[in-house]
Amino acid sequence: MTAASLFKSTARNGLQPVDLGRHLGGIADLIELCFGAELDAGGRGLIREMQMLSRAGPALRLVQGLLLSHQPWNLGYVWVEDGRVVGTVSTQRAAPRSTTWLVANVAVHPDQRRRGIALALMRATLDLVRSQGGSEAILQVDDDNLGAILLYRRLGFGRVTTRTAWVRPGHAPAPAFQPSPFEIRLRSDGEWAAQLALAASVQPEGLVWGQALRPSDFRPSMRQQVEQFLSARQEEHWVAVDPQPAAAGGPNGLAASLSVQIGAPDGDRLTLLVQPKYRGQLERALLVRALRRLGHRPWPARIEAHSDDGALAQTLGDLSFQSGRVLRWMRCGLR
Ligand SMILES: CC(C)(COP(=O)(O)OP(=O)(O)OC[C@H]1O[C@@H](n2cnc3c(N)ncnc32)[C@H](O)[C@@H]1OP(=O)(O)O)[C@@H](O)C(=O)NCCC(=O)NCCS
Image (cartoon, rainbow, N blue to C red; front, side, top):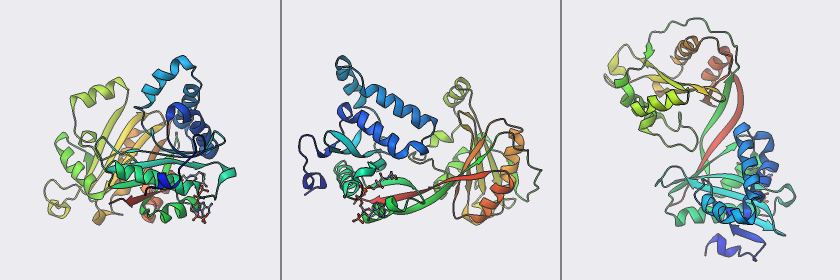
């Protein structure tokens, strides 16, 4: 028997599969209430859009329903009390055809907490994912959100990694040059496969939550160049190469890389990938090289770092980065 059938609902109350045509406004209001303080500008914009869409008149409802059925996060469950959405959980595949599913927007109205609503919503959602052939579900949660972490542990989720978001404010001074025994330089086009292999070997480090590792993120292409030109964005990849190639895993082995995406709306984005045996030896030199090349920037630079890496935290602090949100990624196997 599935969790959904255990919590059979009346027409208006209890557990219900998400129907964005009916529940969109309620979900948006609940997310705003539960996560308002944490939402960035993009998230707040999305909530406003959801609220506006939900107020569309009857003439627009048919079109709206068709559009919404193709939206990301359109699967999941809500809990309804007196016709009002008081609990929600959303899910979607990590990538087309992936058997990894992401779970997000887990929220219950403050007046309705500790009644087992989140547990019921999550169980129904995991059943749904299983029924779609999902092999695992992953989610992220603030590392100090002990209530939610206990909830997820009860459902079989375990920690995958914990990541701290660091921000270097605009106008921070350029760091002093840092000599290094490693060869540090911009990646040549031919080295993209070696960088992809490095990323595959150290993931989930380097992954953006919810995004699978994609060769196209590393492989230079005309399409990528056109896209970057049109969006006024730019990307650079720095690599660190061991002067003794055999030590780094053969002639194509990279000890580390640092990707810099320039021109994102919230500042420049850095992604650091380091082979475990080189940790602590080259991060500072790589970061300094990239930051010096970026020069004096009026906008911030952002990087995510493994929260357990004290040496990297020290380096980032020395380079004027400030630590922010700490997020734990959790995983639950479903087979
Ligand atoms: C986290 C949240 C979704 C839990 O919803 P809920 O409906 O109250 O959770 P449940 O009643 O189903 O709790 C199930 C179990 O999870 C654990 N749990 C849930 N909230 C807890 C809390 N605040 N403190 C300790 N344990 C908690 C307990 O083991 C609980 O079982 P118990 O009540 O028998 O002890 C809710 O507190 C919420 O919306 N918080 C704000 C948004 C948020 O942080 N979402 C998670 C984002 S990743």
